[in-house]
Length: 115
Length: 112
Image: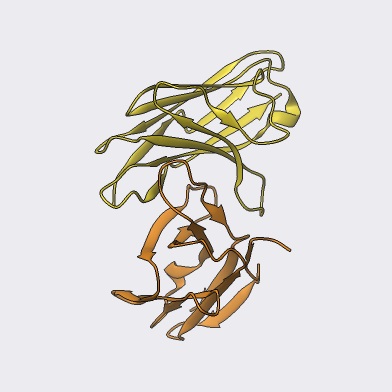
């Protein structure tokens, strides 16, 4: 299947700082990218959907000023958690759609810990 | 009622058993059906992708879609301890702007 990379895989930061997570589709052009959040032993929670060159669409309850998403190209999307707080600690996973059959592929995830 | 229902388990089976994982859904517009496997602290990995009804086989894995019953299944033959993971079903009505709706995931344990 197609490969989606995510960086960093793990980040620990102090409360109040901002953290940027990158998501790249390595061998296909992703027309749509998704950002999910997952708490331990729970399913994926969609945070936002982004299409290249346009503003992201955020799910209800997700603060767009706190979780900034930039889909700058067909292979790169970034999620910036601004002024992170301990309650933002979670597993963030990106996903990209646009392979040969328009399947949706996931990145390996980023574990964010805010102290 | 959730759009996609999936029993969270856990499901525990002995090595070599045939595993049956299932999801039901309520939205008749769904046309694309997927199964993902997720190991602990990893991103989900796409296992099977099916369009509309029918069966699809890939090695030890078989995916079945019954749109008339709004029911999809994933069968794992000759299960191995390495199959122990959470399996998520997912479906969407189309590509482009259509969202993919995920089941809660079923935790599977295959005992050696």
